Image (tube, rainbow, N blue to C red; front, side, top):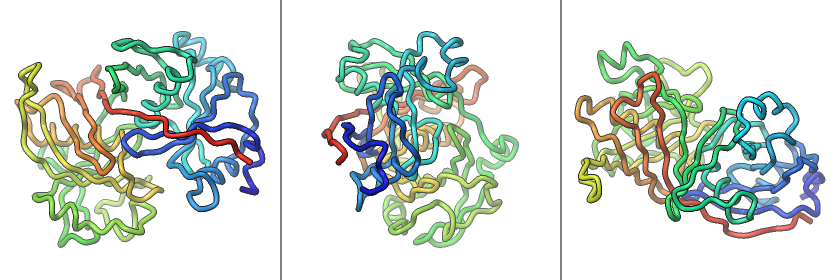
Length: 316
């Protein structure tokens, strides 16, 4: 790993949240000087350790440029300094946030009891994470539709051509920690037929009309009906989905993408739609709570799932 000089001799924690994997550097005082090239080198799956992203676990007051945030949100003692696998600065990842909280607890940096919540800093703002036994719930913040007028009239605003599927497919555009384009499919065999293998982006050969200005994340979903939660006796929507992530290609799990799918399903169902969804992704199972009105002014979407530490490595 010739380019990871800033991380030489440092221990990294490897972990995942529904197979979305990350490398975590515990650096409370922000003492380690790392570059985008260092991060890209260790995240490379052939010449490095391999990961979908990189996180520095740092105290908010120690992170350069975070002084105003630390003053505004003093309860956010820890900051999720998050980077994409190519070394570029990124705002927020719901899956990384779950692993972040798990690492805080397991490493004794901030023990979190069952049922307790912790507030962390991210470049997307403060986020509250709650422990539910072995699961973690992340407040993902507000969501909105990109073209609400068209969505109200038709239930969709974009036509998408997906490799492996015949014809154009109607899609709904959702904004949550970035742009999302959600396509509903009628059968699971269509979901399996989508030809995502080898793709490293959500653009060409996928075609969109209109073309998203800043790119998009593509989610394909097959609704599988509803079940009754035995505790609340409320309906839970069930669906299977796949994600083609912008700048990444297909990933086994994408927290914001799961939230976008749940909001789209709720929007399409209309009055009486479930407030909770159980989403089956290649990496496992994710729960999303959208509430009665996920597009309301003060609404927030909640993402729930597991997180696990899989190992530790010292960079040579």
